[in-house]
Length: 319
Image (cartoon, rainbow, N blue to C red):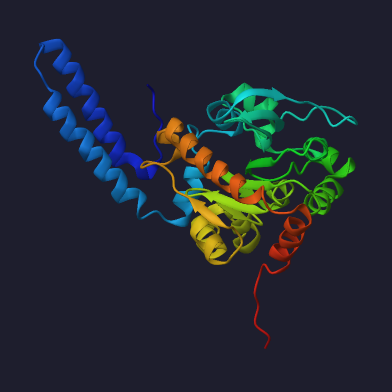
């Protein structure tokens, strides 16, 4: 299997290369190399732990964008059965950057909604790199209202560099569409769980990010602006993106510490991109446990708790 590695993963890439050569030589010569293979596999695991336990904020941003990282549709495929994708906002068109539909989560019918990035160059263009237009957010709201009508829980999977900033998106009311979603999601009478699985940038993430529980995957980020754009505004250059990432405090650990998310979901050793199946299994168990916790709560109580939760976010000092 072809694997892609980031710059800071070079020691891991070198070990994988040596492991492949060892296996090839073993096959050619007929010599049993299984013991040496195990040693190399252990070395890879140890190196992964060493690297991934000491990641900088910028490296976590890079991981959130890893080309092998699983996206919304793959999570749905691995976690559920009988997924029926629903299309269109009944107004303009079907936005391919926002996907959603009913699926069976171990016997429980759930509405899944999330941003979808493309898995290759052509699909990235079709999916607009996960940047939804106003019709994407209106489609998401339509599906949420549909789930509410049938009393089905809602799970949103957030992974976007931001809402699409193009002129046509602004002309069709990008800001209003996101604001409407915030207003309506607070009042939904069904359980709502939001999970940031990759990038969680600005209003593009927040547009499907109001819920009873907000979780982040370990190597995801959540903030008002990307490090590159922050660097451009503050220093007139992208060259300070690493510093911007640190100053923004955008990683899952900081978000949990600030009380902006309810928990951090641990990723497999090597990140979500290294083991899609294990990552989906971990996320599935977390979702099932959280649904079991939320369902018995009265709808009015859930709404009150949701409003209180977001009203209490943030802190400041008076001078």
